[in-house]
Length: 297
Length: 285
Image (tube, rainbow over all chains, first blue to last red; front, side, top):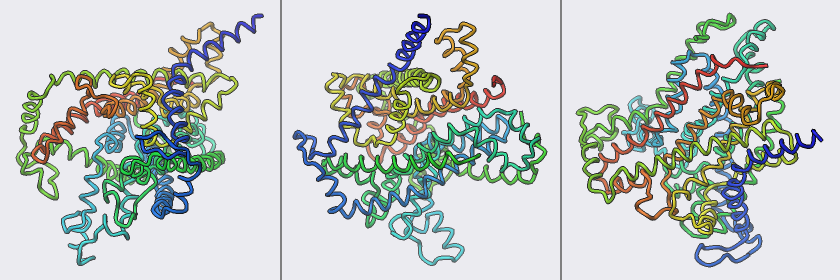
């Protein structure tokens, strides 16, 4: 009898605590996603009601849309470089900062997170990569005699991808970085002392055997944020190289989706791209979860 | 509390190299923000120099003076927009942190059927692009008759998947189950355990969420959901002023500076407290 009433009370608490979040979540997150997935099987121009077309949007994308194929290649290329680098970079930065004393660390965290606050991150890169002789990189290369005429970093297809990847890595670290900084505060300090006694000899061993295993929850969070950051690259390319970029050299799935939704008003196709992107990220997420299980043991 | 030197197996040379490297990265990262500050005090002529100078040659307050006279001409008293923005930011940020933390507590510490399913749903929702959920969201708002109310901005921001995910991961890491069991045995109710034990222990987590949440909501324009001038937010009003063309470049520099001051303040407040927690809460099992 007593157990039953205790269970009832526990259930009541669970429901009361979960309800505010999950009722709004169902209404404003899950429902829109399901609607978008449904719309990916329709022809919908926002004015007339959607017409069901089965898999036509998907087959059009895969078989009749060369730019989509290019966007897939570009997105995967960027994701493979940006994802791991921003993830490991954010962890390394947070970890090294943890060595500093409190005032210095707060200052450094602020400086490194600054691009996420200022929101005008592109301007500095435009200065660096600018295609005339005033662009910083070109000016340097011209003055030192390495090149004789300025390189068009942002319109020459040979350099665009590299430029966009560098800028994206630099802008996409913020969220993971801050959560790693906070996560390091939760590492049990006595473990480090115990580690020193047990023969931890350098900071790499300390990172691998103590810090990383202790930070697994944050690492999992960071990996999901890395995946979304890496696969949804698009704004950087559009801001730096224009949309559409020369020969679609840095055109990504997000750019493609935005074209469908905002320019062509083919909303069904936009939803199909979103669903494909979702599937790709899901696959990637499962792979990383497997990897993380074996890390730091 | 300096930790450098407290561990015998670390080399001093290593520390110096690492620090210099960090300083280099940090100075590069902060450059765009430095430009926001210096541009706001540049006269119009200097704003068009390419490449731009890092610091103004003839610093001036003209941009701010021009901005304030433009604001005086606007339709509504400027305080209206500020009030709207402050309202959605405060309610949105506080609500977001509270309801995410409550749900995260149950998902992290209570065992029940469907717990994993709920959590996976939250993680998966992070992977779906918000570009295409905007239209369905508009349809839902219309059906709920929330169009042209501030709630159309606030409500969708409250159930943030990032918030719940972040809070749950930190509760998994920082709050030992044994401590909660002990507290329950001592007769502490669920509300008390949540408010007085769990939340103080995961302070670094909600201080971090505060930054994400504040930043996201502060920059919200309301977009298609709001058409009544009375309900427009600060970013909308300011972007209307800035869109007055190339002659407004100076004013727009002043606006950029004003817009980033609140997020900077919140960031500094939050981070200086995140760092504090480590020395004060030594509770671990």
